[in-house]
Length: 415
Image (tube, rainbow, N blue to C red; front, side, top):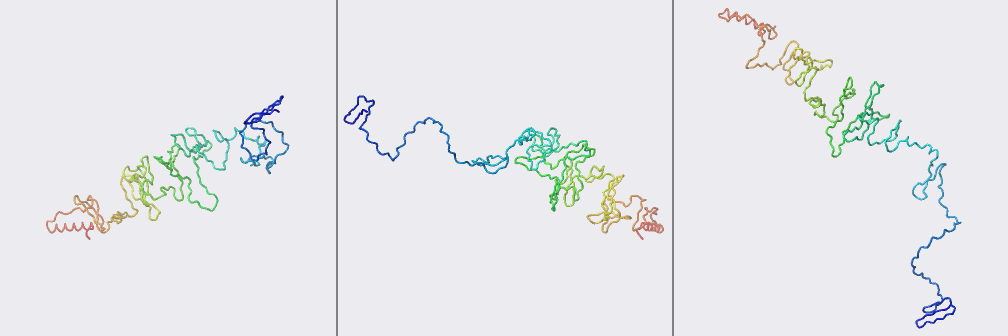
């Protein structure tokens, strides 16, 4: 092959006539190849991505063994993922064709949401927590309901915590109860301290709210029956009706008020004292004035000391006379001391209790000459008559003196 050698001083060209190529060397002919370098050179620039190669031939060498199927399980079970961790599996019951055939009809099950009508008896073994209006019956105006537990109703309407309006069928002629409540105890050796058939507790007042009129119990007028009773309480073995059982209050607020104005009341004002701030009327046609008002013919009575009979004390007869009574003696006391005593056969003034008369008009003992009177146990007589004329001589003086002596003896003034 022709060669061209170029150095710094001259260029010599040796060529063959028929050369097909010419090699040119700058600075001289290359020397022989040196030994391979043991020091890597710097990396060259990244080349362009080449075209995708053809798929290689399938390997004939098996890969490493995998984790395999988890041991255990039972007939009909399937291996499913137990968590998101790789290879974390567990045996579960697989869905069978029989399970699919027994799948509930979507139209015959209760759903978590939506309005539905459910029939038949339902038994809940756990707690039933409901927020909202819950009814047994219908919530249609005018509340023709059977039983309702109400969390709230539309704005402007009253809220009923519990509403019961049962309808008595024609076959239940013995009657019915809106609420029938009873508390039982289970078998066992124990004593329950306090048992309340119904306990009405004062409400909690939320911040910013207020109640104008608070009623522990409100019973509407009962008028629909032949005989109507607002409240009926059977006789209890200790106390049938116990007002103000939390303290011994002595004000009208702890008693009973009557009428829309509550102008009449009845309450405990002290130990063993029952008081009313108004009047007390007794009988079907009592007096229209006074603090204690009796009907004509009514009698105020007291129990006798032997506790085997009653004693009439005061009454008004058909002639409008006030009658004070005593079974054997009637005493008039000042303070706690007897001053006047009326016995079955005589009246008595106690010792040291003189009679005093007025100094203007004075007073009479007897109002007519035919009224009989006697002193010191003498038989009462009318006023003596036939008094002689004034004496004018010893004879008439003696006659007058004898007359006066006889009259004084008859009256019992002298013995």
